[in-house]
Length: 255
Image 1 (cartoon, rainbow, N blue to C red):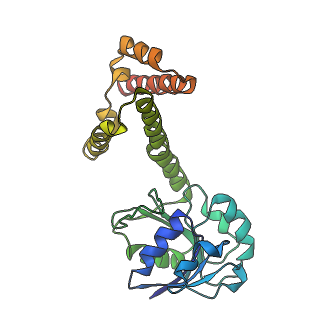
Image 2 (cartoon, helix red, strand yellow; image 1 turned 180 degrees about the vertical axis):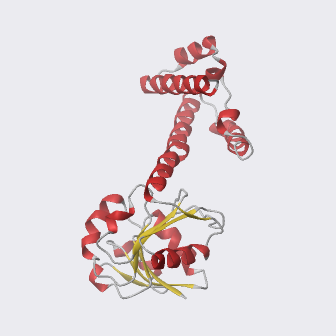
């Protein structure tokens, strides 16, 4: 039985709590959050606290906190005896250097509080400052996922950048597409089959081979028509930037 405490009740912390709570080899002992009100409905399941000094000894303390919150809370947990691990993709492990046993437990996925998710195939990226930390964090990950990766901080930070491109930026493009649809009084739902097929295609085809559209065809008439139709300057700038990026990438791939 792995005993853990979760610090933070944002999207990541909430999803991990729900998953760990239902996993037989894991026992969530405490859940810390600055605002106890947001987790008080779980008080019959776990000991909820809003003061760091009330943390008790467990095997792992998972810091499911924002980057800014991490920096402020670490000085308060230097003497914890268990393994302290953060879940941030962009923060190096050495931010925890003052703690004897520490590491990283990074689930590479997008989380929304009200959207159920299966952890089975989510990559869990593990890093530890010693063999003990790596072993225990790996064991924790293996209880919820079949996809465990041991990567260092530089690799993880690069993965996080890649994730921002394929997830956050892509979702922003969905938002822009939605605004264009709304302006034309057509349903965004018309684009959903296209979005689904695009995502499905890269399971079997590399992104560079899957690229289609007027940019890669260098269809200048269509590109100019699109530019003329776009009414918002930032959308025009983004359209041109992405068009030029696709074309440059295509030129490099032919070298």
